[in-house]
Image (cartoon, rainbow, N blue to C red; front, top):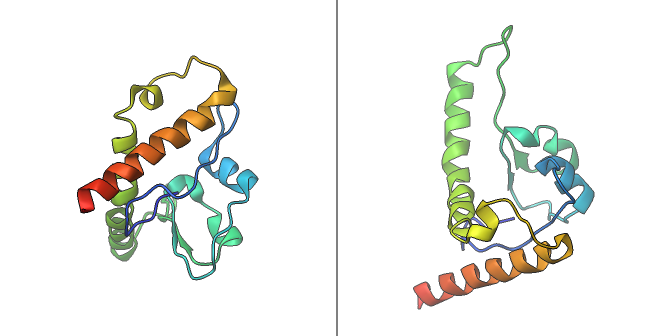
Length: 128
């Protein structure tokens, strides 16, 4: 999870092997306050059942194409979410996160949290 205003990594969760982001989110039971707006990509369809104050883009189907209003809403949501994607890109500068992880699985969470802490401290140094 990333705070949109400060661009800091505020929470992490990890799975064993390949696991979908939304399944990991449900399993981790990360608490979200009701007043916090949760933004997710199209993989988080159904997030509204878990957190009422959340937004995900609408998906189209062959039978039901998106209207112009829905496309505009999806574009506006993408403009809000781009902050999170930029943070993920900054974290992937560390090659251990961008390539296949070949070390002990138990230590991946520790290493990711250390990298997130380095990123957060760099943000603090930039603001001073």
